Image (cartoon, rainbow, N blue to C red; front, top):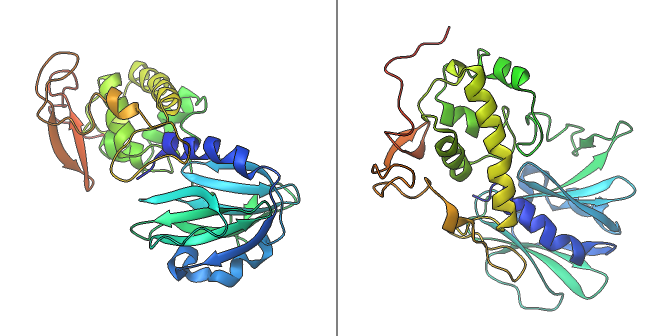
Length: 289
């Protein structure tokens, strides 16, 4: 699944091609891409001029100055790319956004989980969907933004998170928006924290360390254009290289780059977590009340 660095790379690659382009039409090739809203829900976007390509967590937002927007969530295998309007349709193309310059934005998705939706800003500047709901209301702060350690500590010690394994808490987008399986493994390795630690058990020093490592890691991943994992490939021509710098994710059984102890993999909240048993020591027993 593309995480924050991969989606931010998509955003940066697409913005020069989409800026000031008028949407001439939207071809929905697979109904799943619009979910229950249906293709008709995208009709108000026709005619809008894209003035900005934004991002919220793992969702791209194609915005116009008049408050209209299209939101594209790549989810597991979504791949946006530019192509001539008359180019042949690929079997995995789910929707095509035709532009006024003879180009089109192709939304390709091998597994079919990606979603395209129409949004509109209200008078307070909040995006609303066709049901007048804020689709981003459930998200926590962006993982790349400065976060107050005391507020973060209070979240970790709240009823929702305190007894969750730390890896599971970091994957919960209500705590931080943008982290996924790859970078949760990496930041825990960098911070020397066990993925099975109870989230509410972290002390103030550990919290500050974690909050300092997260933006550093994500900034490096963005500069490296994300990680080439499974199906992800950015829209631009330069390849992603962060996979060459990963120290934990996908390295189970290989020596820790810090202490040479073989890394171990285990299932936490339905996801694989890779960590070093020497550098990221598991707690003997923890119950946070």
